[in-house]
Length: 76
Image (tube, rainbow, N blue to C red; front, top):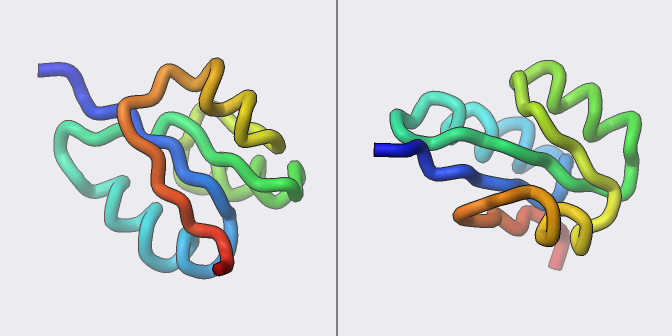
C-alpha cells in the first residue's frame, strides 16, 4: 500500500510542535510538502523534518504537489 502524501499549509508553531512531529511518526504517511509565505522559514522547517517540497503559494502546492490530503494550519 502506498503512503498517503500530505501537504501542510502554514509553518507556524502548531505545525512545528504538533503536526509535523506526529505526522512524521505515522506509518503509511509521508509529509510531501510544506507551504508558507515565508520561503526561508518553510525551507528551514522542511530541511529539519526531511520534507522534500516547499511552496510559497498554496495554488502551486495544490497544482503540483501530487497530494492525497492537506492540513491547513494557518491562523483563523
